[in-house]
Length: 135
Image 1 (cartoon, one colour):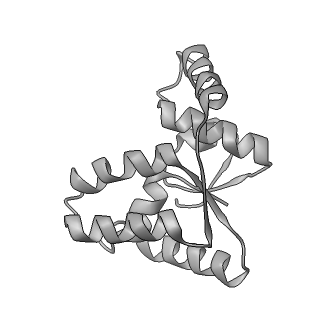
Image 2 (tube, one colour):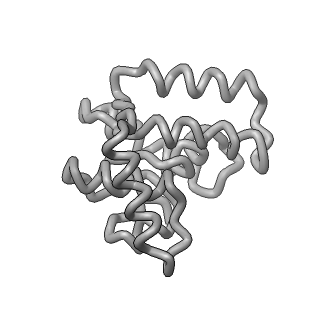
Image 3 (tube, one colour):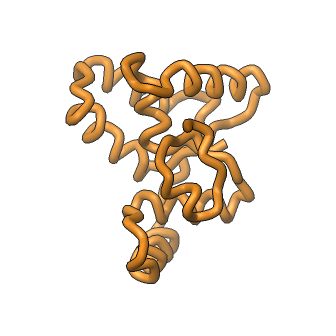
């Protein structure tokens, strides 16, 4: 399973509409000893969302990010120069979509790893042909 920014946000904040489902999905992945894949772009984007509009306390953000960056059950894929260039190419090639660069990098990581399911509430993943688990 791939985890997107909105997926981690729902996991982190019980006020979010899909919090319970996100916690359930993460717990199931951990019980199955499956790695949850995310990217450094997602983790870089996450504090902005958690700060505003979500207004999650900074210490809660730090604790979450420290966990995600070091947990054995999370694999953080670092976007290298080649993948970054491919993400920019995809972003430019789809002027009909409101996909972010982070979305495009995520789609490429998912595609290259054969991942189909995304811990996300972002409909852009469905547009790109993936399964959105938070709906």
